Image (cartoon, rainbow, N blue to C red; front, side, top):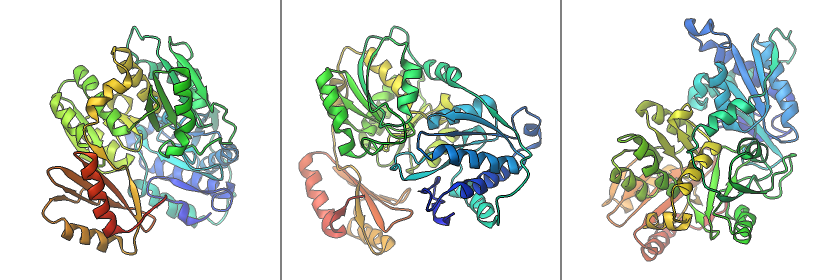
Length: 458
């Protein structure tokens, strides 16, 4: 087991070079030991409080890794509820529905088929990252010398499909009109989950890349423009109202309109603002700081409380809980809901998008057109030798602007702003720029690139 597989938010590496069954066993034991240690007295008496949920995606090595993970948990004395091959948001549902002390999804999310990993959640499906337990799990796992122990815990298999379907569809509004939608499952878990949840609804679904056997027609990352090409082509060919592309474990999604044009995730957040604030007036809505200023403007316009937050699901989920926010959106395609245990869900986001489209006589492109009032660069990566010194240089160069360091460096001017964040693991700075018009955006991008150097693909 390569210690570098322990990342900021999850565990991920090449199979079997960096992560194999032996490593999975050790991580299973360590995870169970850590999560059970967090139980308080009154929780220990609950039926499933000392049990953990385990699930997996469709990768060819997810099943053997899952079995090894479960054996490691059993070796610690923990009981396991195996809920099978599911999307990651269903794990968040399972932990809360079954009342376990946490769970692990075996997945490498949007990475290619040569990768695998683990997403770990604690009580209430709270994320376990480097600052909330992953360092402790790493310490326990890497200190284990062998994978031999008596398996004192039990394993129970459980199919939550019907309960999960009911949970997702409780957000569906009545009188749904017949919407034509194209869904690209990226050969991932959406290919299994979408039919199970949406097959009985009065909508017309055209499925693309629904086969989920561990192979990928295109990489399962919807944020990469090239991976949306097939979806756009089918949307236009079928005359669909909307197209959606999911990532491998179906917790993230990207949207294209009926013309095959990308609708960025911050614009989707802005689109959902009046929808949520009409139902829950005065509520807080959380958004990540890379989002267009249109998000904050829409929240204020409709009487909500805007809450700007650091990038990353751990920060977004904590802020949603702390502020009791009704909804949150992240530029990466994660959307979070108070009534979904403050967790993200691709399927629930799809339901809310169907609700908005169904309630309007306008097309998706017409609905989002007023929200596209700024020009944005999207995230651009730059390789730099000294990330901290480069950011200090930018702060000096643009010292006349309004400065904050909530996440990296953000500097705002009247007509434009930018944020630059350091990568946690690589010598990269990630830049996002927004301006009042395309001409100013091009001007400021050229200015910043002169300082940062040539962008790199990553």
